[in-house]
Image (tube, rainbow, N blue to C red; front, side, top):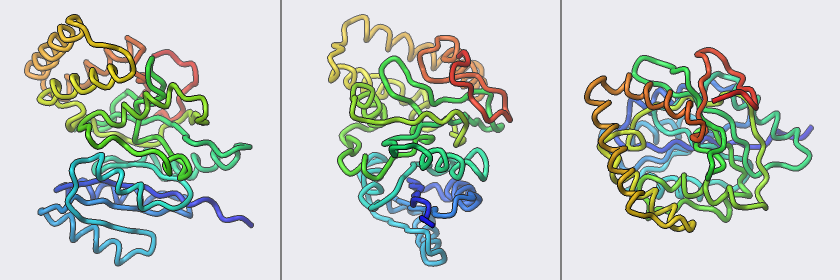
Length: 287
């Protein structure tokens, strides 16, 4: 009987010891049998480095590396460099899986395909400080194949020739997924259920980083031929002002709910409303 393919969960962390414990417990709960966990630590000073290295000593299916890096995308590339077979998925410190069978179910669909896909894209549920939110992300956007890094399973073959642009600080995953939307040689399997829980926060959603994030995305779009204009920068400025005002007036949790609800109504972000507790995501359900 053929052994199931190896699947490696890659977790990136820096000075995030409590979040690492949360993610580690979630990985350990998975029922998929050929599962490995690779932890990439950026030379943390809060005890994270010693913790992940101890896990690697205690468990045969855990590998840990602790060394300085130049940012999250450099760390992600270092993780990819460690993989030599099977499939991989990024689940960063603080994020979790949506249930103990998520990876087993996803891999069952992958191996059932006549030709193994390069990517299998599921859905990620947003989580705030109070718990799961009634929103998921994972669908295609007008320019990108998905916006859900944490619910995308990549084949090792695909990532042999693909790395994240570590010159980018906030949008290298967007740049990769945008480039993939233009390619015809990449096979994609859509998984119509939630795989992971994604903590809504960090630099990707913090208003303090809006300027850097929006300007970097404009530069990425320009590399695909969408030259920014004065209107582009006016929209960026208006969006920054609105986000900071809403976050200041109602607080981060209610602001997150407001902007996710808005994204679902626009229908161009890959996000959808999905009741908390519901796992299945209908292929054509409205945003």
